[in-house]
Structure formats: structure tokens, C-alpha cells
Length: 102
Image 1 (cartoon, rainbow, N blue to C red):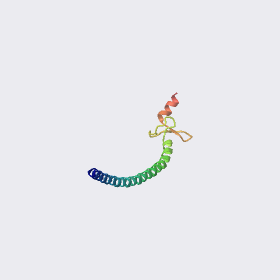
Image 2: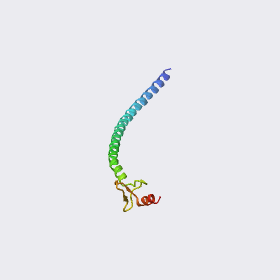
Image 3: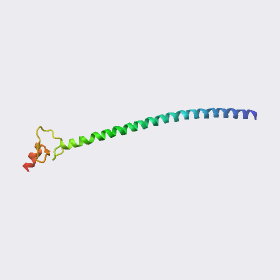
Image 4: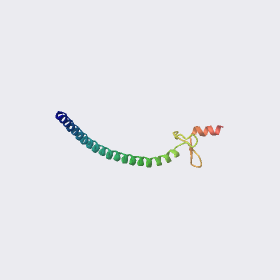
């Protein structure tokens, strides 16, 4: 009977050591997790700032795109001398010839 109690006591001590190790490892993991959350928050803030800058840069280029695009076919005016209408809009020479032919 005493041997059985002694074995149970030893097993309980081993279990307590395992529990303490698990608690220590859990604290380490929690600390790492907190650091990762902070780093993740910083990355998200940086991402938001970059996106805001990109949005600001996109607005002027949209205006330029519409100015440099053919009013009819909506492609960029890549020809050397597009036809500029009296209203100020421009169209490709190819489009202007097709419109007048039909």
C-alpha cells in the first residue's frame, strides 16, 4: 500500500513538473503572440498609409487618362497628330476617317 502511495506521489510530482513546463511555455507563446500582434498592427497601419498615397496619386492620373484618350474608341492617343475637335476633345485619325466615311 505504501509503495502504491509512493508511486502515485512520484507520478503527481512528475505531472506537476509537466504542468509547470506547459505554463512557462504558454507564457513564452503569449509573449511572442503579443509581439506578433504589435508587428501586425504596424504593418496594417503602413498598408493603410500606402493605400492612401496610392489613392491620392490615382486621382490626377485618371484626369490625365481621360485627356489623353480618344473620345470615340477610348484608347490612348498614340498617333503623332490626333484630330482635335472645336470643343477641345481629341480623337484618333483612324476613328475620324471611319466616322466621316460612314
